[in-house]
Length: 386
Image 1: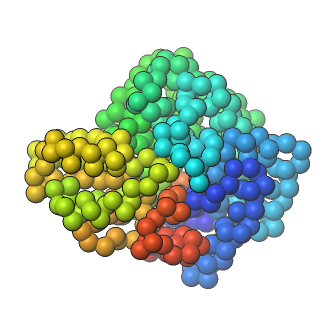
Image 2 (image 1 turned 90 degrees about the horizontal axis):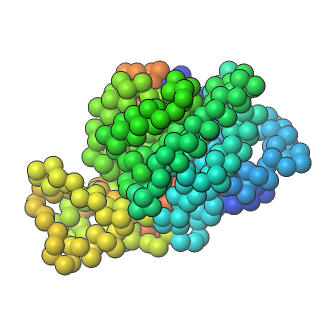
């Protein structure tokens, strides 16, 4: 479906599915229900077709490329007036119901497995993207800081991927691109580090223009808000460097006062064992401190080694629905998503791919839970009225 001159979907990584059959059944059971709810609330929103933000695990991608599965899927998309313009290729393996944490970064971009998986996703995208549209795949920001990854190996695999994307684009007469997604404690995580990484990448490849054409940034409003980056300033800086904004993820994070005992007690409800919930604090001097996960923040605070003042702020990597405002004393970073949509109004050509991504629905506290299809439909309504 259209968003201004671009396209809007929600990411189906919110639905537990690892095989292709599980993925397809989730689309039938949930995505079509969301489509119908969106169409009922906004009768003309899906006139040009309903876009699906596809998530495929490595297993599902391999299976979709076997036999006649891809042809059957395309036929189903046509019958349901749906289309694919983007795939989430960040989580390689299991993403629900198990301890994910830092495993979501494995294999990273030093690995041939990551390169092969991404090739499969682009092979699928090249055949599914409608004529006249560009197709994107989003992926991790190279690696995870804790892994101390070999950056030269990352550059080599990304260059190989860019060449592969170029060949597929030319063969299928379409514009395909990869979006690296900065996030807290990723190999690069904020505006400054993203600019530095791309500067080093482009200095270490044979054809920088080809790489810039095929590899850009997946700008996640939750992640950049966590870093206390200004949305407009960040996007201006990235674009001024000639970097492509491949896709925008629309989501919000949690914010609280780390010096408040009540706020810290409230945030404990979001400490769960599936995903990493990185914490970033900023004091009145603007100094930033990062914690790998909520338990690390709690431990540091309880040891009294945390320097806090009444003006300190803390933000937590926990994706909450776009429309939701948690009960006081907690807050959200919703304003960053609002700023991104405002930026789109001022710069309608800065990006054409937008995706709602609140994958933590299954681990939200009860106070924020509603039926999943209703949650996603309300997120669409929030975006479409901004």
